[in-house]
Amino acid sequence: MINVGVIGVGMIGQDHIRRLTHVLSGARVAGVADVDLDRASAVAAGLSEGRVFESGEKLIADAGVDAVVVTSWGPTHEAYVLAAIAAGKPVFCEKPLASTADACSRIIDAEVATGRRLVQVGFMRRYDAQYRAMKSAVHSGEIGAPLLMHAAHRNPSVPPHFTSDMIINDSAVHDIDVARWMFDDEIASVAVLKPRQNRKAAAGLDDPLVLLLEMAGGVLVDVEVMLNAAFGYDIRGEVVCEDGVVELSESAGVVVKSAGRHAGRIPTDWRERFVRAFDVEFQEWLDDVAAGAEPTGPSSWDGYAATVVCDTGLAALRGGGREPVLLREQPELYRRAAASR
Ligand code: NAD
Ligand code: ISE
Image (cartoon, rainbow, N blue to C red):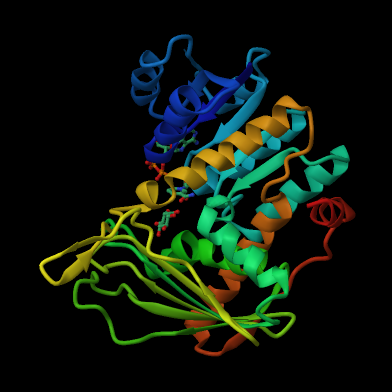
């Protein structure tokens, strides 16, 4: 049984605690930490053996914690991931790995110095059955070489604190990771287009945006991100290849046909749309931890590359042009990990 400590028990932290406790096998939540101690105590009260730690650092250092989940606010991730690496403990960090490229680089340097991967980043779309089937179709060779990908990321609404920068680094970051993973390639340049504003968007929010991601190998990916879609949480993807096309299907399990119409449910949010993907993501991570193996999921390099592409997207949004993505040299540790997948 793996004893997991969870740092940050807000919305997604509580959802991951639910799956670790009630859905998955091989783990128990042994402790929680949060700057909001009342919230941490309330969450721990719902656990059979969960302790409340005064700080994330104390949780990481505790001998009763085998592996760490970081689900606090993005700017706090770096310190916790670095502390887990220093303690030699596996750490699952929700996106973003860290909120600046320099912070991600510091994590890479610390992990590389240990000689083994300890960090997995929470890009859960890689575990979604539809995205996995799409990647297999693209790489099967049966529909020819990929040329283009069209994607859409539609949230029904966003809270008032949401900024235009967050459209890129909080939402589009998932599409950026999907593009890198789908084509096993880096993004070479980013351009951002601004259609006219959705009337439901708050003043100053550039909603929607369209990102144009040019892969190093020449595939072009367009991503519509619209955060006030109102009708539901709608994630779309279509890869156009030389001899065929593969697209994500509607996520509703069933279609009801009645009175001359057909209808299906649209998810209300990411928790509903990606519920199974999150489960598989965590089960695979736990299985790797239990085996004492390096994690096989998204790496610190993936977290770093996604953050650099987001920063490039922000520069493109401000400058209005096409910006090149400038990555540091990839350490051998991550080349080895990619080759073994
Ligand atoms: P939230 O605000 O609901 O919860 C964050 C929690 O972290 C709060 O309880 C807060 O008190 C706590 N916290 C803040 N600073 C802390 C610190 N220094 N130490 C310990 N705890 C601290 O936010 P959320 O929506 O749960 O998001 C948390 C993280 O998960 C973010 O990085 C976000 O980007 C990511 N996220 C990922 C997905 C996904 O689809 N993969 C979805 C939502 C959120
Ligand atoms: C949120 O933070 C997520 O990570 C969701 O997966 C994403 O769809 C949403 O747009 C973000 O705000």
